[in-house]
Image 1 (cartoon, helix red, strand yellow):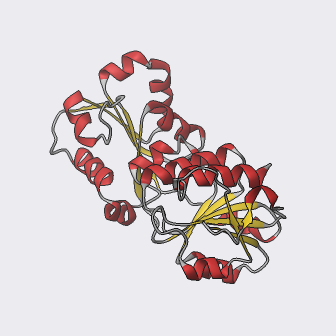
Image 2 (cartoon, rainbow, N blue to C red):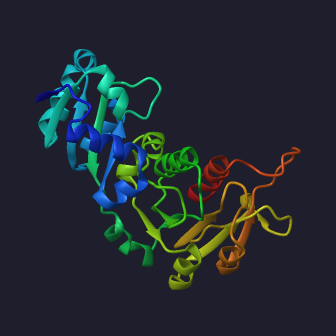
Length: 260
């Protein structure tokens, strides 16, 4: 365990860049996880923690978990509250932050050809929505997530934090486009989630395995070419005056119906 005091330290500079820049995360193959629970989940999930940062106050309040994380991480640094605020992405930092090697999830999708219930996300842009969707999917036992390359960065601090550890446990993969993925996997029973009175109401749908439900962008919904690539169209019946639901709320309802 070493103590860092300068904001010009290379470890601090790297952490700041990883927090703020998706490009740096892609190029370096690393990302940031912040908060005691998320850092601890990363360790329990077997993720490679390259660097672990903590403040003295956080250590005093959680000495046992600090010791576990310190023993697990490749490197551990204690920093001042001021330095921690530089690398933090939260308004009220807890004093625990890890730099983690990007996860290798691709191999886990071999089983998609023989069974399972999956979720596809087409151009989801809000990190809060993506994190919440991952959390819901993991909670209800979804087999895995497919994301189009134009979704927001799954390794952004807000997504990682919002997923409450699901990003470490839930199989996922990023593809060029959901249309291309569906075209290459015709064995899947695919369902396009749309706001369409002609679509089948979700509570009347039988999600026969292997299947995948496809959810679109927060403002624009599914791309027409993506919806056209699906075998069926489903909709969530609503009695109120709202035209549509938030993407993460819609995803939670669809996941529940698909997995029950």
